[in-house]
Image 1 (cartoon, rainbow, N blue to C red):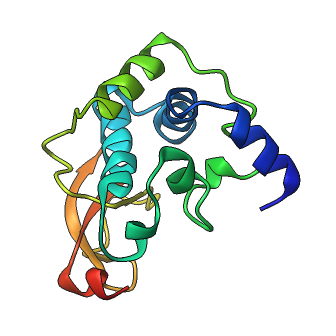
Image 2 (image 1 turned 45 degrees about the vertical axis):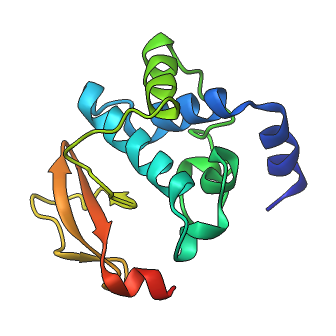
Length: 147
């Protein structure tokens, strides 16, 4: 992680960071899509086992290596995007325990840029839970807990 990323992430509070990530990752996916992304982030924060068991804060989750393209220093990123009231509202909802039932315990999502979702992701550690808008959401398999 570059010094610029570290410095900028330290001045953002968790609500601000989550609101920015929601807009960047799912701003065009409507209310349900944005809630789904927020649910995945908070599922990772609250996960006590496997790879994500090492991360205890929104900042830890967002800036974990190779997790969110929006956490990199690019033109459309959490550093360069201005969230709106809807993004703060959904971030607040998620931080205070709100979860989208459709995503359940999902820990991953991605846009396959196709009509279909892979049945397993990543490295067969997750199985397809649901598709919401352009994103596929994956819940952990038992093999995830060995990571």
